[in-house]
Image 1 (cartoon, rainbow, N blue to C red):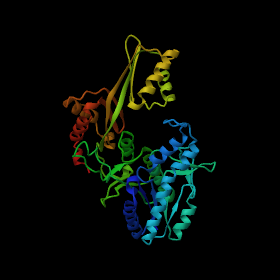
Image 2 (image 1 turned 90 degrees about the vertical axis):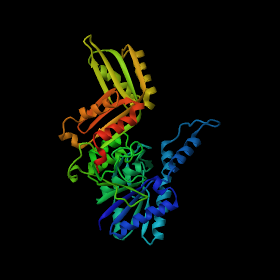
Image 3 (image 1 turned 180 degrees about the vertical axis):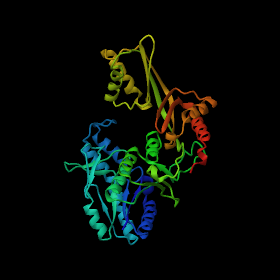
Length: 416
């Protein structure tokens, strides 16, 4: 029997009615002849509630702030959300006459690292699942969790259920991994910004990975990386309709690549500039080493060297990282490891990116992008490029205008 992995996110299993709706989709695939492994998230909002309980339990008496808590117990509590959903989904399928049972991460088992809260999957032993499939029993698997070498429950962090689903698809040799969510596919840009946005029939792994890392919320970066590494075909589908969705696949499966497949944006970006650093070997390391140690997620970087022998360094980071970034840089100046004349911070920026594997074979894409922005009066602060991406930093007030202009310029309303 061919195998299929179906993953349902929190909004898709938010209550019993939605679990029944998801179960009907599972039954449809079973009736079509698949052995199905269903991966479920916790009900919408449940994980946040459990995290809140952990923090409240760990808070010092009489305090409203969270205290130190044991990450191993945090995982034990937070993983229970998926356990509830898996059991309810299995019961619902049984009520429909389907032989199904639930599996927790430790029962499979899903072997992970010991980094509680942000564990990584190291391997999945499918022998138990294979034996049950041979008996005609379908699997309902609690996502987001696994088992450490010490025998403790672990959780996988943000996007963990998507990652779980892709990992099982790879381990089981599944024909496809269907990700069911509250959107019906991957669009050329956010439909809330332009009504001209269109759903893509297919998109290459590399493009989806860039879009996910640049702010698209449909799939998490880790799950796309895993799918690309193991050539797992992903289908992004809606839990609330029967539309076909978007297939994320190898570039070879796409007959003719679009020059540009999508426009992504990140709203809350900041630009930080260090002026008049001494131009000497190791100056960049002296700046970005402390930023890394402080956990600052640096993105775009520009370094300019003047004829007078000074260097200006500009970089971007999320607005939430600005305080840590400035503190790290100022601490370096105080310690004498970094010398600069001025520190300029602009927290009113947005990042706009165009993505497409067709850029590899088409010249002039960046120039076309820059002309479109100039024609609409959008000033560019920082530029970075890769083989299939061009990103610019602009004033946040121009973000929606820039997205619309680029969507029109590259005629993405014709892409499907």
